[in-house]
Length: 483
Image (tube, rainbow, N blue to C red; front, side):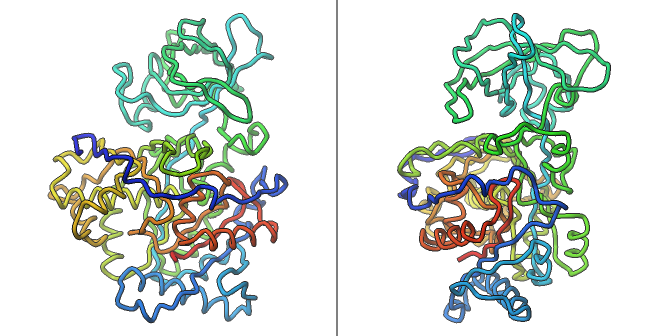
């Protein structure tokens, strides 16, 4: 069913995947509480396919992967790197430039993290009894909000804006006294910012402490205006993932941010962590080699940390995240596809954007999108339904070309819930740079889809654990070729 806001498909299109097949044991001591110092000094696990490409030489997608595979193997042979079961190699992240062929094309998420975690108190309590309030997303379609896009709302007056939050306190009720935000600013400017609870959505169950998911209204009790971005700077802290087991520090303001994040693309409540390894020096080296770089925006939501608690992925509810891709980026990707240049997304968020716009392109080719290319929506199982609905799916080049239309400057934006699980066929991902992910997560299932089997996934993660790689947001990285 297609509407102006996008597509919605039935749940019976979901893949039949046992989540337990992609679970591994993660020793707590391997979870990196802090990033490697200096930035970029992390390790890199390289996983090649080990496939016989000769029998697949007519497949355009496999040709692009073959270029990556050959480039990686050539470099590793010159270094006399020890081969682990034919597919796994241990390197340093700074080696990534050497491992990429000159015609490779990196796709990077330039969304910027904003300080989305506030602490507040009941008006009857002291600051010692503070309550965590984690801002999850702008409340969609609220008449009080100046925009449905987080990056735009952040630049507007904060007063009366409505946001979806997690309040780490049980038995919160609508009509309770407003929570008073606690300032973390070191300047002498005094603002009084209250959070009115206007709707309770559900309980929030988490190892770090239970609470509720709610909608709050921002009430600024001052004659001065304060933008939402300024309010977060004054009252917010860096939203480090709960599994790091510590509160944010001043240094996290810079470290939990990619060097290429854009102020105009602010809106993430979690960093696109694969990008944290890149330094300006490495990016310059990559550029000098001839490797192309393009940027997309996907505002990472807190839902990325929610564990998969069901036995089969078909029963899991995927989180929604906003994205945008400019027309120039689409043109650059089309150019690489035409020339057979391998596409290497940096991070799972970049993958989700690329795969989402492929499916929007399919809809555009079949006249299933209305004239607007704003506020589009892709449901979590829509890709699987569409792959069955069309007799013959278009190539990636054809699908992306359909998105440009007559207005070459427009680009595309909206939200996606796409859930990439084993069995999914990637259209715009020949290799992936990504960190090591939590067990019981949708990110592990995405990696499982790229590796093509539970056995490959377990082999790679078993090696990473045994070799004491550092895991999760501040941990080491991997470079995985599409199997």
